[in-house]
Amino acid sequence: MTPEEQKEVRARQRSRSIVVGLLLGALVILFYGISIAKIAGH
Amino acid sequence: MTTVTIDTRTLPAHWRDFLALTKPRVMTLVVFTGLCGLLAAPGGIHPILGFTAILCIALGAGAAGALNQWYEAEIDAKMKRTAGRPLPAGRMDRQSALHFGVGLSFFSVILLGLATNWLAAAILAVSILFYVIVYTMWLKPRTAQNIVIGGAAGAFPPVIGWAAVTGDVSALPVALFALIFFWTPPHFWALALFVKTDYAKAGIPMLPVVAGEVATRRQIWLYTAIMAAAAMAPVLLRLTGPIYGTTAFLGTALFAIFAFQVSVHRESDPERMKPERRLFKYSILYLFLLFGAVVVDRWVFA
Image 1 (cartoon, rainbow over the protein chains, first blue to last red):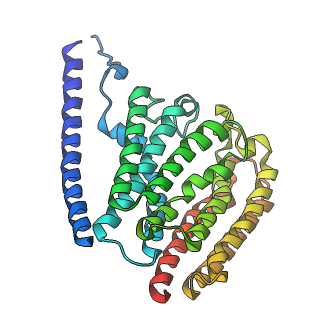
Image 2: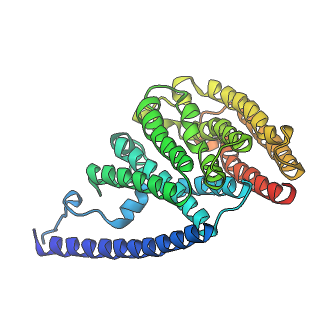
Image 3: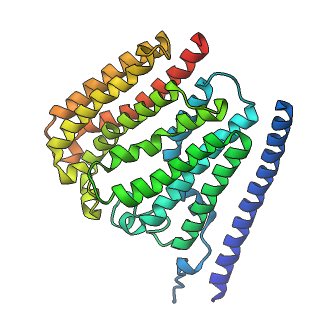
């Protein structure tokens, strides 16, 4: 792998990690909300 | 000077390409009709659970879109409209698309079941399987009536939205299902008339390719008549009131006029297919209008 390719791979891995991190954060908030809504419903 | 070429197939796919796999633009109508089914249902749902239900419908549709692109990568490569998608363009390997689609399918169905109820989740699972197996794998490459039956996959969202609230399926969601089901053929064949050459190249048996343009125009008119009956059914069965009744009557009358113009039009040059483009564009607005009217009507009269 040339340095250019390596740089491109790193950049993509980084942006994918950021997106996955944001999605996981959003899911934490969503599951918290669902739990509250379910408890409130009972 | 040497140029460095990077083989994108050895690179991890960009996250934007995963998003593109879900066909975000097709999702608008799915989300909207699902939301209308949810809002028209009697009784209430906690806003967070309602939001989750719509999210799951959108994720399920996205999963089905991804699996469709996984299966059709070679066909997509032959059509101008689809050649730029992540798989035919070589920006992603097929296995990533498969894993993404299957994972998203399971996630959306399980989340919907946990947040609302398992009937809604089961209908979502059926709609994904129907789109991927019955439509994409079985009917689409085999018969010119592919989109007629395949349209059922797109007709499920209002039923899922309704079931998420009530836990059952009654006459109104079934009527809404029928409306989308019979709306799909005139909507899609209007498009197929002016992109016919593309489908011919990929060997997909779309009606204009197999039966010819005149037969397609006749069938658009035929299915518009059935769709008109489905559109008026909710008000005739007294499931909705005059707001939906008036909107459906006027909207369908205009739809019929445009469909009639298409049925008598004789033109093979896609550049000069104005009535076909008009019918296609109006058909999208039509569905938005009628579903919006169902919700307003139910809120005012039910």
